[in-house]
Amino acid sequence: MNPARAYRFLIWALIGVLIAGLGALALYTFGGTRLEAINAYYGDLLGRTELTGVRGPHYWQGQNVVWAGRRDVKTSGDFGVTATDDAALPESFRGPARSISESIWADKSSVYLRQGDGFKRVLADFKCWYVCGSRLDASDFVIGEYGSRIYRLDAKTGETRLLFEKPAGTRHFHFTAVDPLTGDIYTSLGDAHKAKVTGIMRSQDGGETWQWLDKATGGSRATHRQPTAVYFDKDAIYFGKDNRPPGILVLDRKTGRIEQVFTMSKFFKSWFTGITKVKGSFWAISRSFTNKADPSFGLLWWSGDGKTWVPVQFFTDAPIWLQTGQEGDLISIGFLRKDSDVIAFKVPDRAEMAEWVERGPSVALLDRLLGRNLQGPLKRLIGGSFNQQERAPK
Image (cartoon, rainbow, N blue to C red; front, top):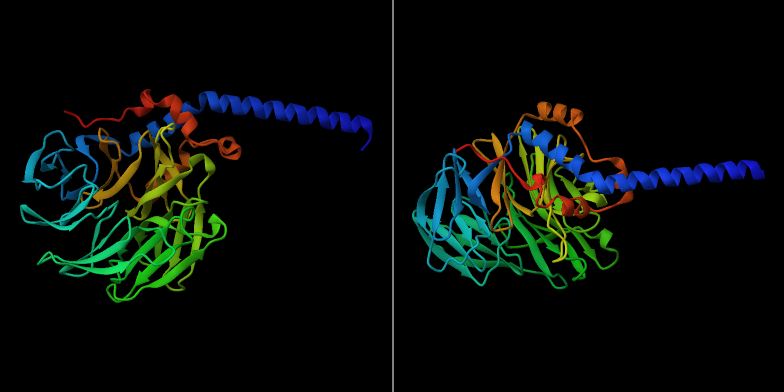
C-alpha cells in the first residue's frame, strides 16, 4: 500500500472510530428512550395490566386469581380491584410464599398440602423455588427441593417418601418437574462455578431409577447445561438456562438430541425462570444476575417457533413466576420484590403477534455489538416512567 493510500485509510478508520464512539455515547445517554418505546408499544397491544395488591406466586382458577396474603389465601375475580379471603393460612406458614398451586404450597422453609380449606405441613426444612410440586398421577405428587432432595407425596395421606438425593459431585437441584405427556420426571443440577458435575437427569419409573440425559464434568462452563426453567411440548422439551452462554435448549423427543437453539445477547444477560406456550407461540421470563450494587431487571420474551426469541417487555424487578390464566387468554408474571404487583398480559394468536413483532421497535444492533449489559440503561430509568405499569381500572 502506497503512503497516500495508507494515509486515506487511516483517516477513514479514524472517522469510523469517531462515529462509532458518538453512536455508543448516544446509545448510553438515550438508550432508555428505546426501552420505553418497546414497553409502550407491546404494553399497549398486549393490554398490560397491573393486578393491584396481587403479589408473588399465584395461579388462576377460571376467572379468579389466587395468591398468598399475610395470613389468608386471597382470591380476586377483577384483577385485584377487590379481594376475598378464601382460606386461612396455617400458623406455621412463614411468608413470603415461594410456590403455590391448587394442592401444593410452600413458604421459605416448608411444604404444605392443601386439603379443602385446611393445610397439612408435609415437609419441613425444605426449600422450594419456582415449581415446588408436579402431579405424577391421580394421587401422587413429586416435590423437588432447590437443594439436595426429591420426594414423592401421597396426596390422600400426606405421607412423603424420599425418591432421590443429589449425585456425588453436584451442588444442588435447580428444578424438578413431571412431564404431563409421559409421566417422566425431569430434574437439572448446577452450578458449574461451584460444582464439578452439572446436567439434566430423567426418571421413567416414578423416581425409582435415574439416568443422565446430559452430563458435564469440569472443563469450560460453556460445556455445562444447567437449566432453571422447563416447558413440555408435544415434539420437544424446552429448557431455559442460567449458565453461560445463557439461552434456550431444546430436547427433540424423537432423537433424544439436546441442542441450544437460542443464545442470549450479553446485553440481556439474565437467567430463565419460566417458559410456557399459549395460542401457538412461546413466552418466557428471565431475571438478571445481580449483586447488591446493581439493580435487578427482567424481561418477557416471545417466540413464534421456540428458536428465535424477542424481548417484548423490560422490568425493573426480577420476574420469577409465569402463569397462564383464564383458559389461555392471558399470561401473568409475579416478581421477587415484596411490593411488586403481578402484571398480566392479553395473549394474541401466533400470527397476530408475529405481525406486531415485525412492525415493532427493537433494541439497536450497536448495543448488542458493544456487549453492554441492560443494567446500564435501567439504572437511569428506575424511578422514571419506565417503572410505572398500567393499573386495572377502579
